[in-house]
Structure formats: C-alpha cells, structure tokens
Image (cartoon, rainbow, N blue to C red; front, side, top):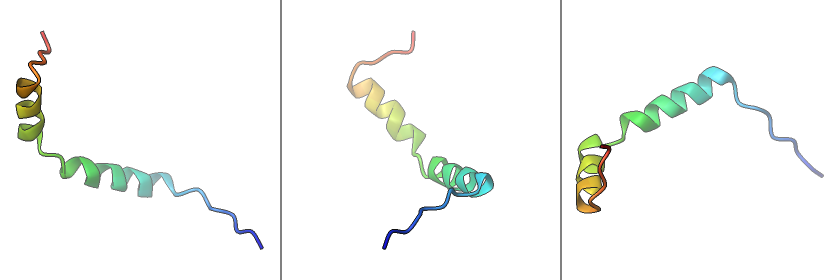
Length: 41
C-alpha cells in the first residue's frame, strides 16, 4: 500500500521559513565570515 504525500499549504511553508530565519544568529554568521576572512567588499 502506498500513500501520497500532500503538498503543504503556502502559508504553512512561509511560517516554517520565518520561524527558521528567526532562529538564525546573525552575529555568529558575521563572526564566521571574519574567521574565514570573507569580505562582502
């Protein structure tokens, strides 16, 4: 027996995406760029 995975609603995916971005520590990302000597210039 096979089951079909249903497509998630757009607003649900948008909420998941926002929740994930809210967890991002941007200071950590900046620090990692500095550690790797990566510049946006």
